[in-house]
Length: 319
Image (cartoon, rainbow, N blue to C red; front, top):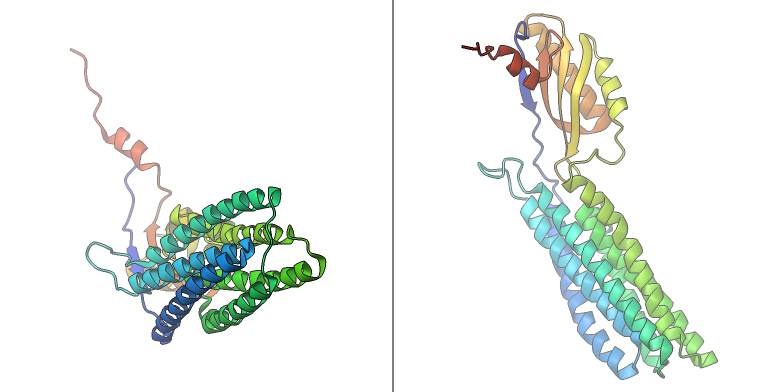
């Protein structure tokens, strides 16, 4: 079936801009990375000297945090680049991919911690609890400082992933301090590997949500917090819109959402259809924060394009 009238294919409001605090975010990430790497080296040496698996686990967690910060900085650098002739959407997915790789690495680290903790539970070793307390207190101060520095940039999923890691490590430092005090007064060396298991659980908890959210974006699933039927209803409520179909919504990055659809309207002059388009885009932007949309107008209900092609093909006559 031929489509009557004309259709409009618009793509407005490409939002590849970044806020004025991007430079501050980059500096915060780099400073946090340097601090974390320095502390990892210190905590690793202290962990071996104190024979504390909890400290060594926390050093591993901090190293994963450093990796998270490195990926966050790299992803942040890439996604700040504008679109070009090859990467027409820009590099917004770079930060999402970095967050996914970071979260997966954390889960692998947690599994290694569980294995080592199991070995230590079967064969407990004495630890130097005073060293554990001092080092964990230093780690707590460092992690809280980084959490504070990154706290104002949590709108980006990649930055938020790094923020969650640092907060989780601050909590693990508190657990180590409490555990070291308990070991001092009870002599129960089994507390040390038990703390390591607790840290591993916290690592998996912090990474799993990021894995789910980043995978949803990479697989172009419906953005979190948006309901397909609600968006369809909002668009159908615009004056002049008869129906909405073939609707797709996905995320370009952790913040930018995109939409494409077919909208059925009456056969009206372009000046009237332009007003309908503006109203639709206003609804999408104001209600659902969808700033990148491609909307095709139709004047009759369209069929499956494959079916349309088959209908146009001539029937071969038999000789």
